[in-house]
Image (cartoon, rainbow, N blue to C red):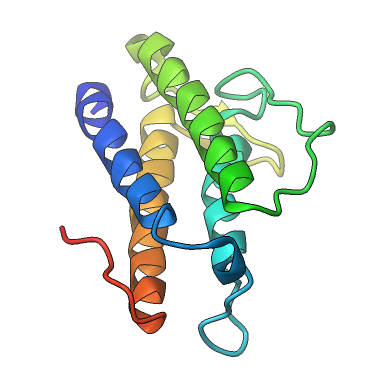
Length: 146
């Protein structure tokens, strides 16, 4: 699983960045339907979810977000995505596979294994990459061609 993720996650992130590059700053507030999140919020949700599950002091070192500013431009969001991805791939590369199926206790008292957590974050990114691609279609632009 670790080798699979290391082989495929960078390509998924490259595709995500190409989707993000198809938006403009003025698109970040676009809400595709009532009750939905804005395009910009979905983009940030991808990296925030990785931080929640992987960079939380349980599986990997805690990423201190207290000094983070608001991300209001596409360039700022893209930088945030790239920073988080570098931390995620470094954590995955350094992760001891002997602990791959060892349950870790998360806040709230739930136990999750790293193989489940890494896969969950990877699949989550793929899901929202597709959602952002669909939003591009709603904006009358070409989405990701997978």
